[in-house]
Image (cartoon, rainbow, N blue to C red; front, side):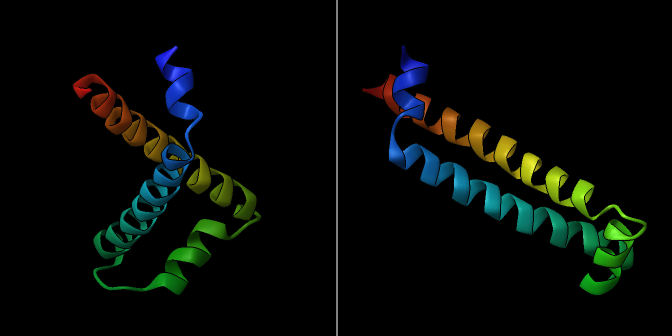
Length: 84
């Protein structure tokens, strides 16, 4: 029952969104710097979405962000619930 009570709160989903979004931005910025040595977003985006890979790129990014945000937010809310 704790799982249902955690995921039914609005604050949980806000946390999932913001953690996922911050992960998405930080992960892509770090990847760009490691691969190109500078912030070359246009080149990064063209390489990731070229040859009809746009849908795959977007779905992969959104899925990764959601999974990261969900796991971290669930851990945070579960920890808060255990303390109480």
